[in-house]
Length: 467
Image (cartoon, rainbow, N blue to C red; front, side, top):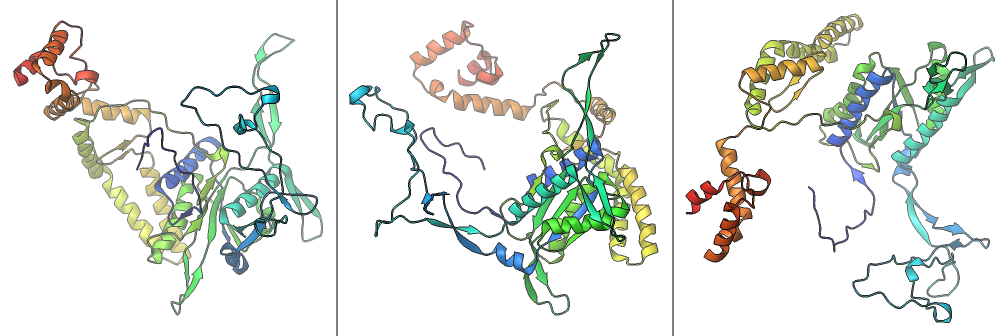
């Protein structure tokens, strides 16, 4: 819900802890777009991981400690700055300017910057250190710390000792980039763009959840299970995998880290969606557990850019055309969707390895058939290419749709009611005021046919309706 307070009302600042129980629809959309964007631009995410928390870390998530506020003075006391009231706009003439000996301390209080001082206790009058409670641990801060360390390791490279005691060095990330601006070749005068190597940053995203832990045999509630699901565009050769996984687990430092390879980067979003959504549904919960702070995070280079509106068409005939197109799409491709859902259920129910591989191949074949198809629902359509969009609008044009705004009886009556509501004061005015305005409109000084001003109601219609 959006609210627009008046100019004299100050919006209250956010305070307290931010606690969420579910991944928002906006967050899920950002994650899905990031997966698809990275797959199109840089090959997609390649590694999926789950970071768990130990018993000690879980206790620290619920524990607070008192920490001093401000900087420390040489005597060991906290120094703070005074709160200065910001300048306020004056509704009256400006006060006289004080200068020289007549300078007043309160004349320009908002611009005065006072030095730090040590607060004194109200009762004893002695200097003391104010303390405020802070959380010992939060999922958001630990995720930021982990990815900052992993990012440095990804860029600079790393090393480890193998089984024979030899030092194995793994190089960091290197990528070519184009230097801004063109240069001229002195030999032949050709224009070219210089290329340079740089340390490419790590692309990643993470989602936190906090489901319940339940004993499978007794059904006893064992507490909460906070953990993080993450994806990275980082894969190492198999000979380095064991040392790499141990190094990342050490960087995390709060428990076990489970890593696995993403076989198809195009479907990386399904890993996070299944891990973050299906686990809590299987426990019969309506939420994913409370998380304090941010619930997900995406690195800067992995964020998909915002959507750009290319075309906009007025809703009219296109409404029932979308419903008809949805019915046609279901008749042609509904069987593939049903086959895909059936194979997914069979894959979840089967534990036999060879049988799972066989079902997995069939499922992948059906997904490859569905992937290039457009998505058409009763209310919207998503096209995978310009050719699909052109075919849809050609079909809609044959059904009577035109790109120009289409009028209808409902729209005409609605516009008339809006015009009457906006100009009600004029219509209810006396004969003299109404006659003056009508004469002005009849003379052509006011454009009554303008939709923005009078909603398309002509003077002749006014005469017929209101006499």
